[in-house]
Length: 249
Picture (cartoon, rainbow, N blue to C red):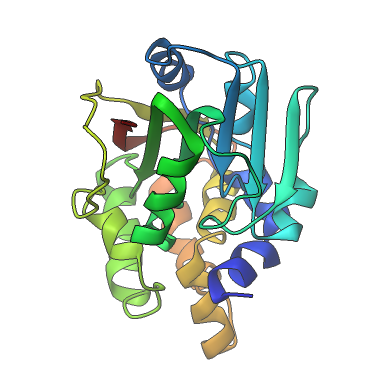
C-alpha cells in the first residue's frame, strides 16, 4: 500500500465530511461532449464526490479507489458500482467507456502507464477529464494565514506530486487532443468548523502531525478564528478549478 493510499484512508470519514462538492456545470459540460452516455468511470473516487453527479448523466457509473477505507465511506446510490483498483490497472474491458474522470488525484499517478490504460479503456472519441483545485479564497486576512500555513508550516511535508496542483496541471501532458473548457470553480458557504475540518484532511497536515506529534491546525486555529470573526456565521469560500480534458483517438 502506498503512502498516499494510507494517508487518505486514515481520514476517510473526515474526507467525506469536509471536502467541497464540485459544481454541477462541470458535469453538464463533460456530458455534453460525450457522444454516448452509457458508462463513465471515476478513478480514485474517494468518497464519491464526482461519482454521484455523474450518475445524473450516465446510465452506469463505475467508481474505483485503491483505498478500501475511502470506498467504505462512499455513498452508493443506484447505478454506481464501487470496486478497489489501482489507477493504472483497471479490471475492465477495452474500449468500454464513454468518459473517464479523475477528481483531485491525477497528480499522484500521472504516468505513461496510467495514460496507456486510459487509452485502452475509452471508446474512440471518448472523453478523459481530470481536475484539481488549490488554495481556497475567502478574504485577505484568512487567505494570508492559510497561504503561510501551506507554504511555510507545511513546506517539505507535501508528498511528491503536489507540485502539479500548484501548477494547475499545466505540467502534465496527456496524450490526447485537448478540449478547451470554460472556467469552473467550487463555491460554498462554510462555517469555521468546516474550514478547520477541511485543513485536517490535507496530506501534509497528517505527515506533519505524525512527525511532530501534535496537530498543526490546532496551533493555527486561534489566529484563524480571530480573522474569521463570529464562528456561528458562515463565509463564502471559493476554489478555482484547473481542468485537463481530451478526446481519445
